[in-house]
Image (cartoon, rainbow, N blue to C red):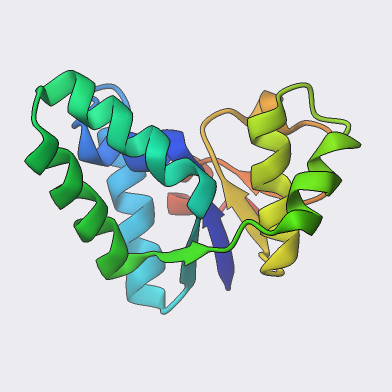
Amino acid sequence: MKILVDTNVILDVLLNRTEFINDSLAALEKASLQGDRLYFSSSSVTDVYYLIRKQTQSKEMALDAIKKMAEFLVFAEVNGNCILAATVSKLNDYEDAVVDAVASNVKADYIMTRNLTDFKNANNKVMSPTDFVNDTYY
């Protein structure tokens, strides 16, 4: 299975967000153990860097986090077609529209996100980390 992982799921793990880390980490581990291919939009890497550096006040920790991501995620290309597809998307948030377009570009089976309502009108199927862990996403 191909899964495009949304920024919030990655940040749950990298920033140890108490309320969400258990399901997000369990979902990523399960996907890895099953041999699922995990993608992450290249356009979102700078957001991860910024937020980790802001919280930790450490450039090195932010860069290390990106290197860790590269160990288990494929950084999916954001090309001109993705950028333009996002401009006509039915999603309200442009960043989410880009994620949806990138998921289409890599032919993802799902987008894994905690913000299911933000992707209500997405072109791709969405699931939460909790649903993935509990096998309730089919």
